[in-house]
Image (cartoon, rainbow, N blue to C red; front, side, top):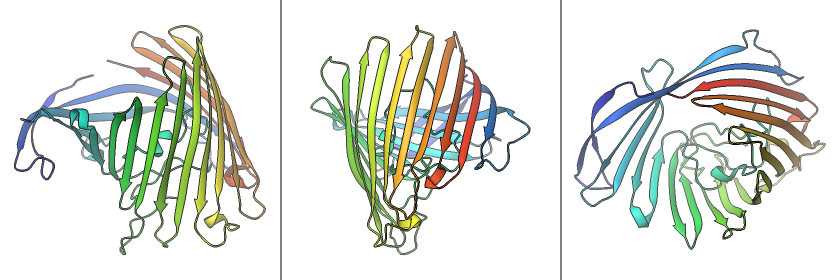
Length: 329
């Protein structure tokens, strides 16, 4: 839904020295009406007002430089439209790849591969309160992407993760002493026309206390007709001396997902997460659930129910159910 255009003058700075770019930002948004309900010992309160409307506005624009490269800018606005919640700038260098910077949520690298298994809507951990999983955190930083020998390559770098990760893993607050540098590399490789795609990557997440978490992932996804199946294993290896303590634990997450496209408009999926911890007395966390998505013209109806036990590897349950009705304009 394009609402209006706003004049913009941006300076490319160190990317393209002394080049001013004059362009426009288009404001877009959508209408999303949702119903959310939560249950379980980890869900202390279940909001009595379960129906809400999402408030999303994004201002975006792009301009072509004299050398043929393209600079794009995006601001995800706050609900009042008075400020920016997340901003990013991207330089598309053609065959040399794309480099982007985000002030809150860069993605890329291993973070982009946190869960590659197929799903009709959200990941199976969505709506489960307090869940943990092995996976690279997310925050401000740079991401570079390119295609190499048929594989999609993504590299992420951050001096400090200054925004909370959405995957439940430990994140690093900005440290005055400069500790906490994090980086990762992710690779996606489709195997010819077989329907098989292989995923893998490694990375290191620096911590403010001088310890580091080494990450790795390997996964496969196979599509055959209306069915798609995926399997993945993520690992976190904490360099702290005592991995039996929850704050310094090692984690392993095993993920399975299966989706089925009933037709062009309707799809269903099932997913399962299992996360084990080296902490003393830790229980295996397990989360599973189903999701359904149905599209009709510019309207999409999506539903999930996700249920977890031994949340954060201790005794506790959490269940989340969401129904979303989204309209595209």
